[in-house]
Image (cartoon, rainbow, N blue to C red; front, side, top):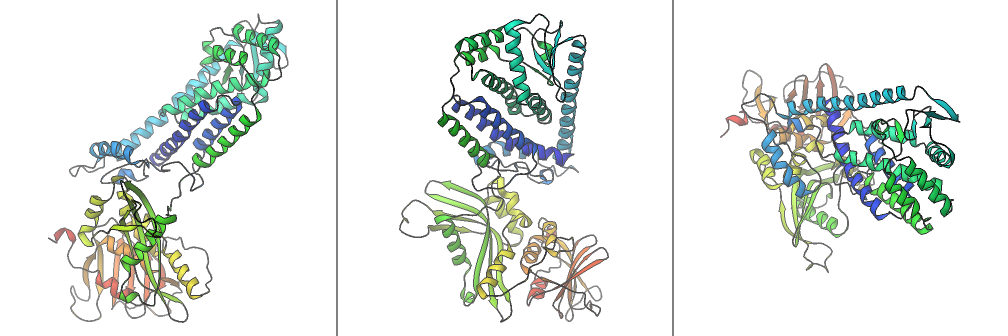
Length: 586
């Protein structure tokens, strides 16, 4: 339930941007037909209903996941609105109020979020119960009535006309209403039915029941009800002359009696905002074609910009993107790079501008490939969060790239986490520490190298099973130590035939992310223990790299999967091995 609640919170926040835009658009499009506003509220409803959205580079939504799904397990909880000033105002309070206490056995958010979810569900039930009870009371009020026309009933207890029912709607009018007033009222109510307004209001209330905690959703519901009434008025009067409009306005005034029971029932459709509607009717002018066209274009623009999410794998284009490419290549290139195909991929986490400088906080994946005549193989590479600052003052206008002010990378080992926390903005620290969350793809780099060397490959379905070694990255990246068993074929041995030690979780995650092993069939002979190193990721989840046969094995329970490794993979794995836990190392 907590996961659902956090998903609803994020959907509420993304929809809030659209609600604010629609409120502004209503003001700018006040001369446009009111059905355009109803259409815009329909976009809001879709945004609130759909748990997913398409990605677009034109999206104006700052961030599609403001509250991380696993925030309850963070050591320093933080949210990311996509606007740094908002993050800086809110996150210090969140970190101070909900950061785990070392003396406590549980993270405060692991209590707060489930409790908030219960309050949320309770609020939904209260809203729905209110709607049901008010509907039953109103239904009882009109139980004694007489038919006055098709789908029209007159009742002594009714003081103002309204529609009751979504699937079998009935128009109820006061028994005393007759003549021209009844005619105009009937036309108005039937226009509601033709527009299916008796469906949209209950749907709006249902969404309001789910998002009752969001004040902007209450504002949207109130404005929706007003726009529906105004749009219906416009539908009725658009072909009327001035005399008929005056008579219609009088009919509206005749209906402006207290109707608390109708207004209290979300499933009843009564008249609202009569004074404003009378002014609108008397001042009504048929909108020009260009106004309607501009309003439709505005709807399309809002749909493209605020119904879509920003790309999850954000990249850079133009001069800044070229500058990033060149900076990465120059930073990593060495004398040993000669003859290699150099490629890279990025996941841009944040672009921050300050004065004449622009800093790009980015996951950088840099790889170099060689060709053995049959296929490409990776020679070296790195996958690391970096902060690259460029001089964008304009003095490099004639150059194809900006000048690099600073190319920053965290130090390895025990400094890694502290360096990132000190350098990166709080809102993206979690992403910078989660190598498994980076969208920079080794597969893209490999494919680029194969295309460069003209290697034809046959691609199949992606390997997504739990036996995929890459899945271990997400499990070890936050671990200080991963227990490791080393079976040396020669040299010093401890505890009989094995050496028991550790490997740093961040280093192991980087290693597994770069190896790109190829899945193979099960070997015919048994795999020997000597000359292997085994990483115990978690209970029943182990990865073993063998020395002689260039094979790795992933074990999950009783299931096995074998991979062909590359030259040097075994030596790199053994090189990470150390004998004492990090907590014991000064």
